[in-house]
Image (cartoon, rainbow, N blue to C red; front, side, top):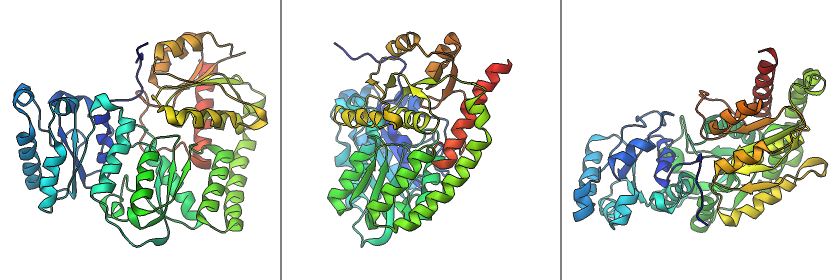
Length: 432
């Protein structure tokens, strides 16, 4: 049976140019049609130097389909090098250029041989989504641009979620940076403000790599281990709230050989503050019954798993069937299923991997929530929540009704922010 894609939660692989946009002084060069370029442009911004809607593109047309587009790509790169003040140019390909057989690697290598900062990554949409493309682009940059370096003690590379695809990516990254710094690590990240190419050059010098994600980003850190011998910690759960964040910090501390007593002091201080706020609002959580005790998530693996862990382990809610719609590769699905079984109080959550949004909505309609439903998903779930009279929070791509500048969902702070958002929604429904 053909795979159904309804209410999609991702873009084509070429959409991973957002990964490039998020690295300061790095710019994509597209070998694709102008329509592809226009559709994947977003309004989320870039690393600050270039507009996310203005970048070099070969604008493949019927002529290139017939006669080939390599010459046009060569000219596009050559002119981009003349007029754009960038430290690194990443050439990426769309479906049309891949189908007609243009060799973007050959063209990029011509410039590399001249000492120009040009790398390439094949990113046709028919090969995968922007979630796959994120790893393809990072691997290409690590392979063609990053040079071997002596290891720097205590330096760790941190990778979390996909820039812009996850609207909370910047805040999440900085929050985890801060927590790991408190443990005593020197944290190297390449995305966002005041990071970029200089940090990219330090990637090979790291003692360890840490990737916080169920599956996105794992392939690129595996490549770093293979090329530079850097061991990695794959922590599959985005840590939200006290329970998972403390667990994450202990895992990092053990993996990197830090002082366990110091780690516990850091955790104790954060938990004391976290539970101070929880206790202040205990009446709201336990007596006012602003929300029901059952919830459903419908989104990518990153947030569906993280939210389920948080609402069950920290807030004492009960998960119904949970839905993951990011087309997770088969080889990671069993690991994710097992994580949904690792909940407190012996609770286990059933999870379904699908790309059929209509089927998900039909199933949610038939769930017995035993009270007001709580639906956490994308903008596609908003109308469903209205139909069911449910409490609703947009926590995963696409996010259309909320402006997110530098908020965070992770850590102790992110958990409190998430509680604020959930109960604000519930309180508004009570008074309207």
